[in-house]
Image: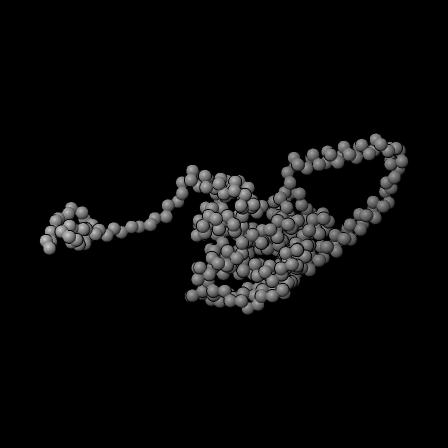
Length: 333
């Protein structure tokens, strides 16, 4: 058998085999896989397809779909899975707790179940080179946050306590996992709360008031006007006002008791309500000014009741507020 060799100008490494007098060259080529971010047109076309599919009810348009897909890409989640587990709630993206649980495990976080039942959940977080961290979310925590009466907590308490505990624990142990997201469970619970209602503008309020006035005028025209003018006496109004004052004081005392139990400074909390929370929610009056100081009893009774029911959420917002941060800096200096 004749062996023939020939020179090749190829710089690639080669292997030569002789098969029946013919030379066969085997060239080994290294291939590199490069992840390329899709361009804008490709992303929007994909997002529009998903949005129109009707398979993702939380997504209402292609722009929301694009935001979810890109956020999922940052987290290392594929588009379909991202659209199933990440959703916009009240203008902010949220993610399911179980996905955070999976992401934490992928990043080497170990999570040990200390307790998980219908009364609460306790988890222990650990990672190589870091101290152990234990976190709990109990029935009392749910009551303070105004969650114990919700259908989800009453129907599936074990899972609800776990969801809250996993998000609370990971947020403290390794906040990098969240990348600014909130959990879907927290966002949905908070969106149902009266404290989280988006502030209404003056434009939608006016038509409601005008409609009410029109209806009131119609009833007046149908009925005799003179007896109606004589109907409302002045004395019952003073009694109602007195009852309202007493109820305000009762609600304010409950709020003060909860703040004392949580170790929150009352003066700072009232300042937070008046200067920060009420500016974000102009339709709310949790406090009012009395003798140059913020006072709970000067707020609206309806808003005080809302604050009392959701005191846990209000305390969480207070601990993230500028008022608390500035006071904390003063104490440290």
